Image (cartoon, rainbow, N blue to C red):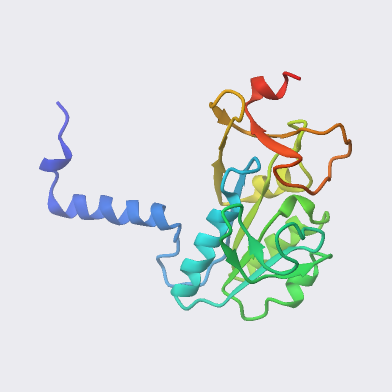
Length: 211
């Protein structure tokens, strides 16, 4: 016969609560030793990836941690320098064209945020791994799939090495179900096409295959 949580000994309940808090706030280091790790936030456009990235980075700053944020130089949809979510939340960042630059600009940093990781070059995975080995918490956000529903850029590799993965979903603009594909409304081809609501809308798998 099972034992309900209300009848668990206080010591066991406290241990359970402590473990739950560790999971909620993604703070696995309980030994006092500086350890780095990689968090990846993925999903379709309009799913809240950048919003979640900004939330975690702002919490890190509240904790008086040294934070640096980077985004690809080609992404100037909302702002040339700031990382900006679709809901207009913003945080200052450094636009870069080469992921290796991140290693040169993060000496003594506790937390590194990287937005739109799918647009970075092939070295972004190695950069994140090196940062984690330095003891840095790395938080990456990006599209896991392109407009055709295919793996996008280096995101599959980043997901493979991540310690923690958060998959977010938007709402399908056709049927209202969960959406995981950034459907392109124009006839333009090519995997990389920077745009917003005038070009893309979130769709579920079924609706994305309906023309």
